Image (tube, rainbow, N blue to C red; front, side, top):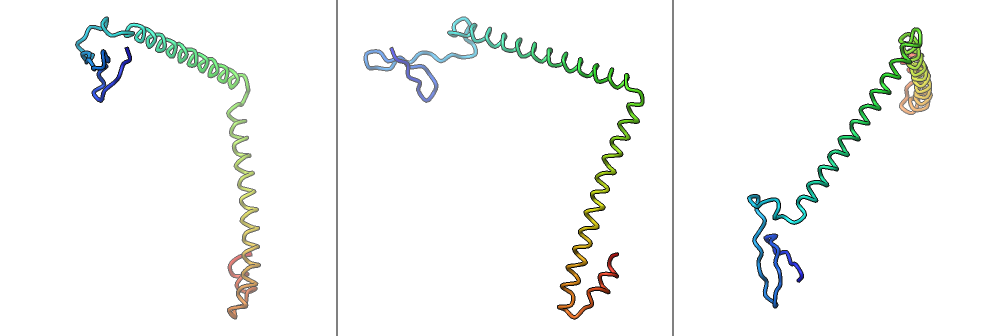
Length: 133
């Protein structure tokens, strides 16, 4: 017998060409009367347990890694000084690159001013000297 689901989500059995309505499953029904409930419930419990076990393993691994990092930091003398030195060096490199970029940009702008200002009757060399080196 084929099952048809109507708009009210009630299972309908077709017998002799006429639909016969089965009673809807309500929250008051006994769980034993719901087909597959226990199978689904136990599958969800196993899934929850599996996920919980995975998280426990991940957290344990993270704790291990944190301890290893801590041990490495303790074993290196002056670890904080090295970290600050490296960080400072990186900042110096960026600052140097930024200064170089600013100087190059200023030079290009001065050259552009020298070309554009005479069009308007202004002296480009004097203005360029006034705004930058």
